[in-house]
Length: 221
Image (cartoon, rainbow, N blue to C red):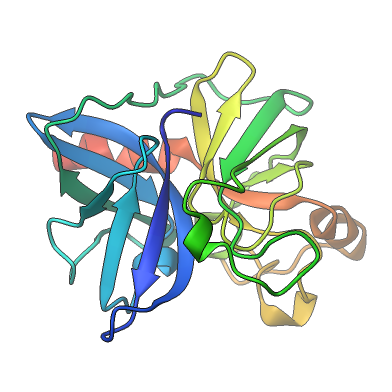
C-alpha cells in the first residue's frame, strides 16, 4: 500500500481534470521510477505524483513517458530527497485462483459524479480477489491478467499484489466493458469464443509485471 501513488493530471490553467494511479518500482539516488498505464500519461499537459506522505512531485519530464512497445504501460520519474518504499516484484508465474489485491485512487466519490481531486489521498481503495483468467495470448495493449477484484475509473495504473505483497501487474480495464470497443480482441487480431468472452466480461484486466521485466532486461542488454 505504501508504494501506491496518485497521479493528478492538470490542464494548462492549473485545474485538475483527471487522475490515475501508479506504483513506485525503482530508486536511483533521489530519482524514483513510477510504473503506470500509458493511457494515464498520454497526451498530458502537466502531471504530478502524489506520494503516500501527501507531498506532490513534478515529473522530471512532463512531455515524455517511457513506453513499453504497444502495451498499455509506461514509466515516469520524479525526484525527491524523501525516502519512499519500493514495490518488490514477483518473478514466478501466477496461477488461476491465486489471491490478489488491487489498489488505487478512484476519480469519483462512491455512487456520484463528484470528483475526489480535492481529497488527495483520501478515498484510496484496496480490493481483494483472485486470478480468474490467464489467456495464453495477450489481449490488445498487453492485457493478459484477468482477476475478480472490483476496480473503478481512476485506479488505472495502480498496482496488483499477490498474497505476499509482491507486485504482479497494474490495473487498467474495469469489468463489463462494451465488447464492441475492441478491448476483448487478442493482439493477433483473433476474437475469443462466445463462452470465453462471457468470462472475460466478468473480469477486471491488468498488464502483467512480466511485461515490465521483459522490457527492463532489454534496456540493460
